[in-house]
Amino acid sequence: YEAPSTQLEIKLAEIWQELLGVENISVNDDFFDLGGHSLTANIMVARLHKELSVEVPMKEVFKNSTVRELAGYIQRSSGSEFESINKTELREYYPLSAAQKRLFSLYELDRESTSYNMPMVMYLEGNLDRERFEAVMQKVVERHEALRTMFIIVEDVPVQKVEQSVAFNLEFIDNADEDKINDIVVKFIRPFDLGKAPLIRAALVCLGRERHLLLVDMHHIISDGTSIDIIFNDIAGLYKGATLEPLAIQYKDYAVWQQERYINSEKYIKQKAYWKKVFTGDIPELGLITDYPRPLVLSNDGDRVGCSVGREIMQGLRKLTAETGTTLFMALLAAYNVLLSKYTRKSDIVVGAAMAGRSHADLEKVVGMFVNTLALRNHITAGKTFKEFLNDVKTTTLEAIENQDYQFDELVKMLGIRWDLGRNPLFDTMFTLQNIEIKDIEIDGLKFKPYEMDNRIAKFDIALFASENGDDLYLEMEYRTQLYKRETIKRMLGHFVDVLKVISKGV
Image (cartoon, rainbow, N blue to C red; front, side):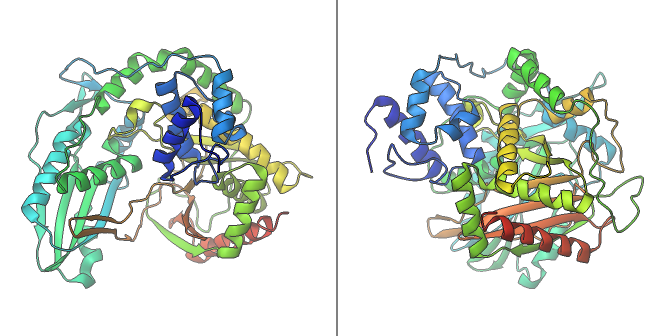
């Protein structure tokens, strides 16, 4: 251990400590060894820009991954002025962000769909004050404008309108049978009318005197995974009587800034040029063989198959990422590319990956839809070792993250790809390493614990989800039941574990 000594090293250690939840950080500690990953690195880079007026490319975070190395890089770098997102003037309507435009288009295609609902279910154990909890939920809705926003069309253009106040009603369901929880949850998840605020609903289900279930459902157009984390932290703080710091900006301010300033900036134009170069030439189609004929219009009916890989494979993967200076996301993505290449006999593979989309430091505490989808294109070359291919995937991933603000819909439009109701544009499969999780919370003797829901929706032909579970790794493969049989996906997931088994041994 060597304590940070310069002002810059001390500042970096403070940021790492807050982001990673680790104390007594040494100047020789590695960001990724301490639990950092692409999402936390992205937040760190945004904070450094705001607080130190320096832009650190993501690839430099990997090259300079200790406090001492990163401080040295920052000292050698030229400054880059940080532009804050300012509050916009009050208007009757505000533009949609790029991410919201796509979700509104999907809503217009099928207003009765629940595919883009974001339900969350939590167990509440302990003495619950119902009136206090209902008041807290109302305060959360008052705090975040996104939760009071509706979407309408004005002069043929979709816009968002923020209601100054809405009545939020917490539904109560008493004397529920615990064996019928799944039925209650399924009934609770229903379509939203985007023309009516709030686009959030909640219910408290009483399972016993000190045992409740909290159901929360929101439409994706006003929320994302990080937003759920923000909302639950606010609920916890307000329930125990804390005073929350006022928000500097709201989602509408970001939407106006994005449309009026950022999309016309030099940085955004450079990102557009990057993606144009990545997809020069023919666009590869995965062409994974299906069990059933592909219908002209696909539904989002789906199912999941899951398994754990075991401690030995997980240890091998951690050793591999440490040796190659990569992350678990990169290693799993590379392995997934290998699997898809074996199944399709193709070497040019495109896999989708969702990015949190909060590359500006002012957006850390804002509730809203920021997620952008990255189309990660990798080429598997015969004769390369897996480690060599993993290095290629690392380069591709870091470059994509550097250019993550260019919106997926804009890329599809630029490439002239027609939207097809029978398949997704640009790629048919997604990979997600789930870094955001709602942890157990305890407030005044009241414990919040996540409840695992039975998911029956698939937005892609196949999607691979991975989540760290201590010394193990849990995998789930989501699939469209219109295209695949369960046994096919189960076999495919087994083959993916076989790939991980091989690469975890250092091949």
